[in-house]
Length: 252
Figure 1 (tube, one colour):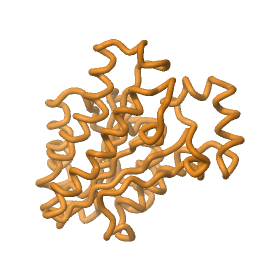
Figure 2 (cartoon, helix red, strand yellow):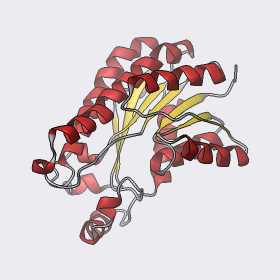
Figure 3 (cartoon, one colour):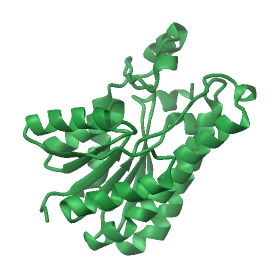
Figure 4 (cartoon, one colour):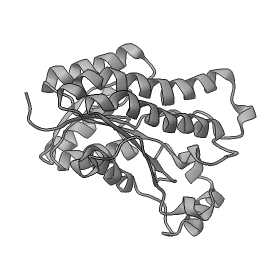
């Protein structure tokens, strides 16, 4: 059984998830790199190991309950413990107003972004409790804080995630498990490609954000590291907005 903290990070073959896996591994965590594709996960895990870190690649489609169960089971089998879960994977198949979102797309967004996060947190619960309490961190979005004409249903799912954070903090707190979220603004990732390809949108974020730039994945990874670390030991049920100050301007 490893003495390192063991942390599952969903959606960690790229973007914020990958940056978080690399950052936490550098801080001494044994990280589980997870996304749908095993080869993509293994490539990231190999780079982490080459840099001296501890990483295991376990593919998981967050929309499938049996794969969520296998992710937790294989992690505990491999390392003998589980200390933290970072719920980063998400779906957003539609870029446009809500009248373009059909029932199938709506169900995918809500299932993958809300139900799967709730399900994985509950699957991890007994192991986090056994590790003397741990942390669950959801990667939300400022899209869940404001109205939006382009990714509105995605924003609805993130607003539901923010409520999930509060509910889980109450439900899991008795086991010593802390539950928080980080809500990023626009981050330079493949997931945000539709927004990043909109030059007017990028210019708006760059000029309106008080820090005058878009976020890099590592900016969010560092907040995640804080939320799973001891320095946030008295923090639970909170959604930390990490948007370079954009939200104080009145939204987007």
